[in-house]
Length: 180
Image (cartoon, rainbow, N blue to C red; front, side, top):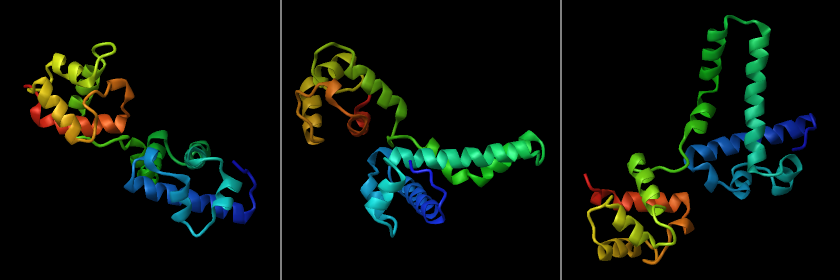
């Protein structure tokens, strides 16, 4: 990250930081690209890379800025520690909520974890076999394969090839068939 304190550089960094926060309110962090951040501002890609190396660098900039403000307040002695913590949380509510936002949204988080555990329950087996043998759903092998295909997956897919987002999609699709 470019650490110059020139007013235009600081203004650009703050604009990119605001754009990232705005995008994080609408999209999961891992789906946001540098291109989206740049498009959210009136600045150009060259300016982005003059100030940051990646979107992670922007998030680090925001975090450092927030923590710097927190420690400045703590060290100033403006009230007791608990009051300072509550003021900090209130002032940075938007940012703190975004950090607490889950990477993916699913209907039943517990079932997602059960589904992933089942997918890795047997070595070198297809997802159909793993899900069937785990008995987490009330479906036979054929129905499991059909549901995979309906959701855009090959019925011979293996658990280790799927992303977290794909597991989320499948867990939501299999949820209505969950065993009680």
